[in-house]
Image 1: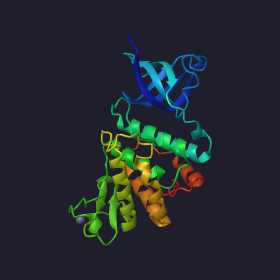
Image 2 (image 1 turned 90 degrees about the horizontal axis):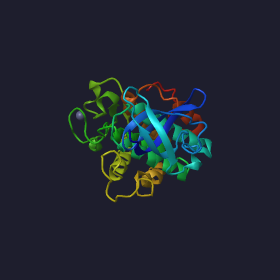
Image 3 (image 1 turned 45 degrees about the vertical axis):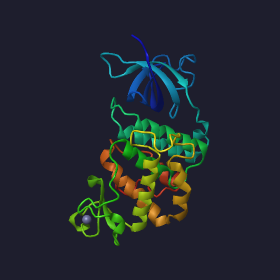
Image 4 (image 1 turned 30 degrees about the horizontal axis):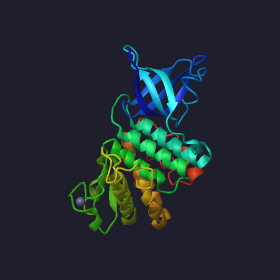
Length: 287
Ligand SMILES: [Zn+2]
């Protein structure tokens, strides 16, 4: 049987027996899948240190008819991101990225948008320390990529534009969007969102859409998402005008929107608060 080949990012690995590894990857060609790398701990030729978390590799593999685990033949480094391990801040942010991608995706569900977003975000984190909007852009892009683009422009109840609303709107995770100040009494769940936080989310969403992340094509310029033309271009401007209170609202809002689509609790949340001073510390109970 012939091997297939795809670019892939290692999401997690575990040792298996004396010399094997079981590896879960997010790939461009085949979505998320797991495979066994026989002799991975011994073979520098087939796996030269390339089966570690965050590794961006070209993976040769083949499916096995009666096994959920693919057979991994070789992994060659495609793009090194050495600085992800340099600081606790970058490592923590990158860990959140791969864990969120893992828990949002189902094995063998094919689609390359999530792969592209994870690759772009890890490249961004390798290039510079994470800022206050870095992970929010990733989280929103991951929602877009998975087909859960939130409705932040018009009311989910009456379809009036939310931007024209004077009062806070109610964001409801199960609705994938917000209810205006007239409609918000219909629901008790979710959270109230200030105009400032709603405006910030709108800016981030426009940046994600412009970069072509999460809508299946390459956006307006065809640039890589991490070369300064991607959604990261708005990071500085957003961070500069965002109050601490609105930053916290935006973080909680993304928590709320992501929650219905995650399988299992995000362990990375416990570190985001202490390490990155991220408003989401995992203790808010929203997940
Ligand atoms: Zn309404």
